[in-house]
Image (cartoon, rainbow, N blue to C red):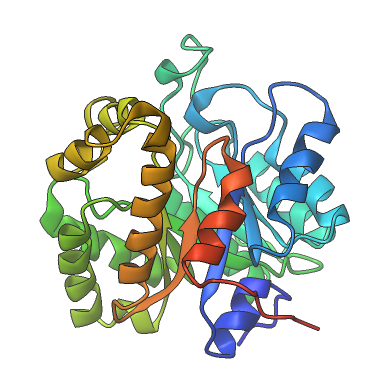
Amino acid sequence: MTNTRSNIERILDAGGFVVTSECGPPRGADAEVVRKKGELLKGVVDAVNVTDNQTSVVRMSSLSSCVILKEMGFDPILQVVCRDRNRIALQSDILGAAALSINNILCLSGDHQKFGDHPKAKNVFDIDSIQLIQAVRTMRDEGRFIGGEEIKGKPMLFIGAAENPFADPFEIRAPRLGKKVKAGCEFIQTQCIYNLERFERWMVMVRDRGLHEKCAILAGVTPFKSVGMARYMKNQVPGMDVPDEMIERMKGVPKEQQAEEGINICVETIQRLKEIPGVRGIHIMAIEWEEKVSEIAEAAGLLPRPQLP
């Protein structure tokens, strides 16, 4: 136990099942946008991810948005990508987050800038996500920077990362998770799960390596709003695995009922994920549909959330 004051860590230590969600910061400086999203998630989740210029589109900084949510009583998860900062800036932000009592960090490589709104921007990738995990772990546990110098005031952060069980080649996905766990990762949030059969096979490989005992697996879900969204996720989003039968199910209901059907699929998915050995929580990524997170959590039997001191 590291006692970072992370809600995720405390619930896991007590043997509980964690629920997290996501808040995408606005493309402007209006703090009310973050607060309105936060209001929709109050009492529904244990911690909230704040994305870091997701899809390489410029937005309010993750750290600033985390502070706004912290003021509302949330336990934010600071997402940090290696795309935009070198090791000096990354370590500086890690210290700053810890100083502001941000309790969790999610270490990511980041989408390539050519997919975003500034395709001519210069990327950094001074270190990769596994090296970033290792850096945070060393800063916290050994009190040393990447360069080896001593830190005066260690950052206390619960360390997470992302993993995609659906990317190819499939055989390397569990070993890749093993590298992140070895680097110091303590919780994993997965890519959106639609192909449950493949996720279950990945979990077998994870359990065979004992990784679920060293790192909490939080299974990611995203509800479809329409059959058009389901097709987009299947055909346009790299690394996404949407089975044909799921598209057919969405097509099989009238347009005005497709959002409800998407919620039904999401709830059924969560109920199956809860039964898979080694799954320690659910990460609900509603993608600008935060008002549905409470409905999904309630229907999936994830409420009420534990009351922490």
